[in-house]
Amino acid sequence: MLNRAKELQVKLTGYRHDFHTFPEVGFQEFRTSTKVAEILSALDCRVQHNVGKTGVVGELGQGLPIVAIRADMDALPLQEDNQTSYKSQKPGVMHACGHDAHIAILLGVAELLSKEEEFPGTVRFLFQPAEEVGDDEGMSGAPRMIQDGAMGGGVEMVIALHVSAHVPVGQIQIGAGPSSGGVDTFRASIIGMGGHGARPHETVDPIYLSAHVLLALHGIVSRRLNPYDPAVVSIGSIHAGNAENIIPNQVDILGTLRYTQHKVQEQIHAEIKKSFEVAKCLGGDYTLKFEIGSPPMINNEKVVNLIKQTAIDLIGSENVHPPQDGLGAEDFGCFSEMAPGAMFYLGSMVEGDEREHHNSRFDVDDQCLPFGVAILAETALRFLRNGGFL
Ligand SMILES: [Zn+2]
Ligand SMILES: [Zn+2]
Image (cartoon, rainbow, N blue to C red; front, top):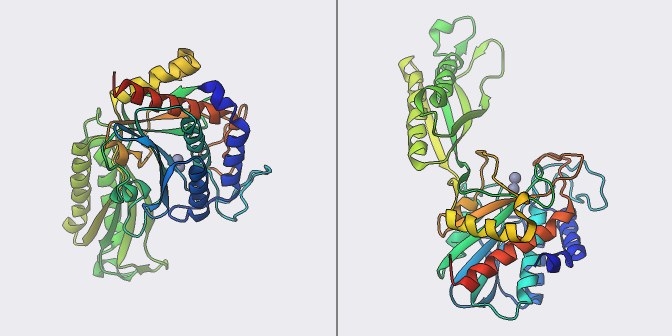
């Protein structure tokens, strides 16, 4: 399978460079999804358009079981600083997370599987929009696709990969358990009563109140949670006032929280609320709203074992490693809540020049593409031919 994937190298590189040249941000993937649908149709896939707004679903094979493979398609609002022949032609938009590689790889998987003689069951290709952003209602691409039925019909396994700039080409990282954090956002205002900077005793100074609230917020993880429960509470934005001698009416605060277990999520919500109650004790008030984001991504042990064994057979056990822990967000967790699932990290490091994700100089070594194709395609085939998990 790896040799067959390597024969596709030129084509895969071509796909990636094309998507890289014309990047589109979340829920704007119009050109991208049109291209994807064209290529899938040419491979005799059954194709469904506009699944989760700008998503595309392709299918090969018939009946049960169903294996789903997901690739996210969106770029980031970032100006590219690379000077490659395929650099972004769209000012202020760039594929800086490697989703261009994910699309190219999944198209390669579809091509290889379309040439298989016969396999029992169905392979479903989920080309997902908007992994990086939510829409007006705060929903990203994965839950939107699920809403439109992308996981319907009895999907028994869902798999995906993400390129990693920190892992050398030819290697992967995979492990069971939580592999990304659940993420929620909170928006709050601390409400006081503004007035003259020289007469603070006649005001309720919300900036003073916010100092106490911030201290309480930053004590949640260090003083209130079990140290064995991974979690983060971070304040990313705080705004108030616009003159040195005017005490403002309110302070606006934006923050994010991360967790790996739902009971910890509930606990953090309660503790954040308590932290804002401090403003009331000191004579002010507050408003607080949570936006529930992606759930944590929990890699299923059986799926991990299947991917791991497949990868060991294809690239050798010396190239299959456990992942580094992190609480980054990834909405693949929505799919893997619906069916046993796992995502692995595919080494895509540009040798001698590490390119950070979400950085204006991010890039991918195209030699990684066939490795991703081979591991995903072979994992799906083994699952179907085994008639499920061994
Ligand atoms: Zn990203
Ligand atoms: Zn990403």
